[in-house]
Length: 126
Image (cartoon, rainbow, N blue to C red):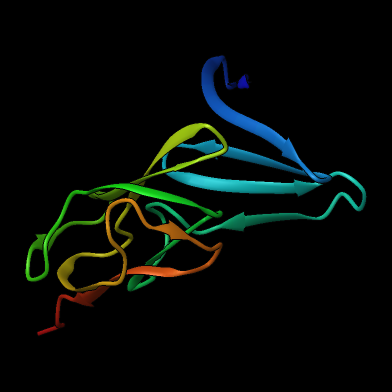
């Protein structure tokens, strides 16, 4: 389902779905969860905004597009792959600048929650 949240007078749209007592919300390349029974919140990495050298599967799903190749230079927030989960399409983004070191999935592959899909070699500090 699509949800709309107003923050400081600006409307933001996100995709959400309730699965077995957990509310999954996908917004701007990130996935957030809220356990409805305990109220415990968490953020599943799947988009820009951290410092991880890996792009992880934020939920179980199917890889539908690879947008980078091994050796390609990337910037923070750059899309690296697209996956389909919960009948929605998610674009997963790099969190750091660097080069693609390895791709550990293929188009059409079903991946598990938390699987490392893409490894990034960070730009070296000089």
